[in-house]
Length: 435
Image (cartoon, rainbow, N blue to C red; front, side, top):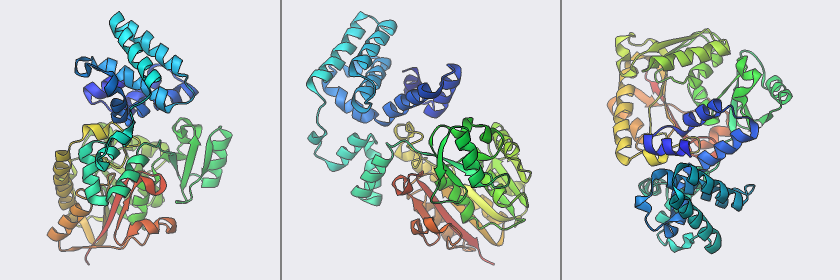
C-alpha cells in the first residue's frame, strides 16, 4: 500500500520503488513474486477496480488516498487472484485500516468489501460506448484509447490494451563474446532457473520462472537482461567488424553493449547520455560483460556536433526519448501519468536529436531511429519530417534482421506491438546517408 501511495502521490516509478522495497525488507522467493503481483496488478487494473468500487463508495472524493489504495489492493486480490481467500484479503484490509486510521475507517473498509462480496461486481456491459468500454475494461485512459483507435482501429487497439495487462516474460541476451546460448541455458538450469531458447533471436533466452539478474551467470557477465524487441535494433544497424558507432541516447546501455558484442571487441561504440550517473551505469555494465570497445561520454546529444567532427561514424543509433507507451506491461504507471501534450513536446526533442547527429554520419552510413512507443506521431511522422528536411538521407530496407522477424518489417520500418510476440511495443526505422 505504501508503494501504491508513493506512485500516486509523488509520480514515483513503480519498478524502482518495488526493487527498493524488496531489498529493504530482504524479501525472498514467493514473497517477491506476491509483492510484484499485488503492486503491478493493482496499478494495471486501477480504472477497472475504481469502476467496481464506485457504486459502493458514497463519498469517494472525501476519502484519504491511502484508503482508496487499500480498497483497490484488496479488491484486486478478491477479483483477480485465486490463491488468496476472500476472507483473508478482507481481514488484512480491516486490520491495516485499524492500524493506520480510526475505527470508522476500518468499519467503512469492512462494509465496502463485504457489500461487494455479497452483491457482486457491477457489470461492464452497462458501458455502451465501445471506446469507453475498452478504456474501463483494460484500464487505459480514454484519451489514449481514442488516439489508438484513430491510428490502428478498434480491434487492434483492444488487443494491444489487453496485451498490456499481461506480465512480460523476462528475456536474456547471451554475451556471445564469453559463452554460447547452449552453455548458458545449461548453466542457468543448473542454477535452478526455468529457461528456454527464444524462437526469434539466436542470442536470446526466455526465463519462465525466476529473475536471472540475480544469477551467478549474470554477475559473471555471461548475459544481460534485454527485451527481444530492443535486441532487434543492433541487427537493424547492419554492423561490420571494426566500425565506429555512436549510440546517442544510450542509458542504461542495453543496446550499447549489444552493439559492442556484435562488433566482437573491434571498432568502438561511443555512448552518450545527458546524466553522469547513467553513463557510469553503462560503463559498469560494459565492465561486467568484459567489453573494452565502449567509450561513455556525458553529453546532450543535441550538442554532439560540438564534440565530434562531421562524418566521424559508420553507424548512428538514435534510441530517442519517448512516451514509453510500448512498455506499459513493465511500467504500468506511465499510462496514467502521460498526457497528450507530452507526446507533442517529445517529438520536438526527437527531431532536434536526429538533426544534430545526422552530419556526424559518414556518406553511405546507416542511421537507425528507434523508440519504445507505438505512437505514430513519435514514430512514422518523426521519420517523415526528418527525411523531408534532410534530402541527403533515404529509407534503407531492413534486410539484416533475422528471418522470423521479417513479417513484422515494412520496408525500412518496423512497428512491433505488444501482442505480436509478447515483446515490448517498439519502433525501428533504418535510414541511409546517400553516397
